[in-house]
Length: 125
Image 1 (cartoon, rainbow, N blue to C red):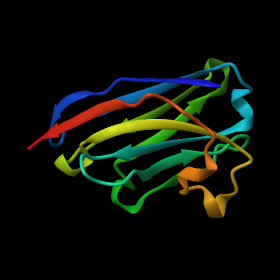
Image 2 (cartoon, rainbow, N blue to C red; image 1 turned 90 degrees about the vertical axis):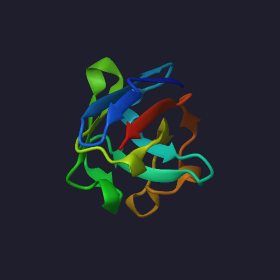
Image 3 (cartoon, rainbow, N blue to C red; image 1 turned 30 degrees about the horizontal axis):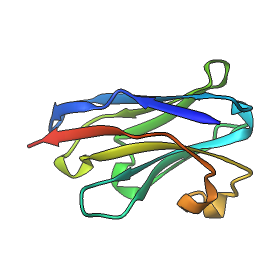
Image 4 (cartoon, rainbow, N blue to C red; image 1 turned 180 degrees about the vertical axis):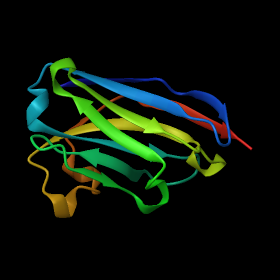
């Protein structure tokens, strides 16, 4: 499975931005899709995930109410809509795909077998 993320950029605090990730080479609708991020000098952290089938969603607390994850299986694409962005959201955002990810481990990066190259989101204050 190959994942290609895109949509990052430079925005101001309070702005919105959407990033997307297109998958190829696998059965997309069988994978849990997730977004992780890594800020400079910090560890990679879970942002959000969406299951399939069923499209149950999960978020880290700091982005709840601001970020929305979605997927379109017919397009092999997962999206992350980010609203009310804050400087602390600045990071490289990575999409990831994992087969058979259980809910209790959905925030664990080790559960995801496939990773995209990352897209940089910079939020200025």
